[in-house]
Length: 66
Image (tube, rainbow, N blue to C red; front, side, top):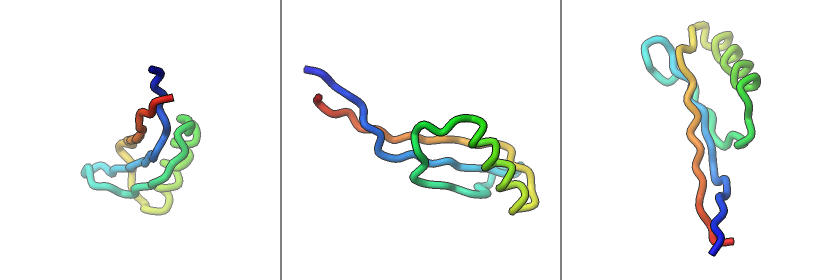
């Protein structure tokens, strides 16, 4: 039996210095790389007028029999 992983969903959560969620983006493509996340972080800082202290990415996958 062969098992493969299939991307289901991903989201990014940007938190401010008080550890409150400044912005949450859902349905992010799984291949996103650090430079794109950095650009989004900079945009969130400009829009909110605050500092983004951390960014977390959660990826949900499912295992399927191939």
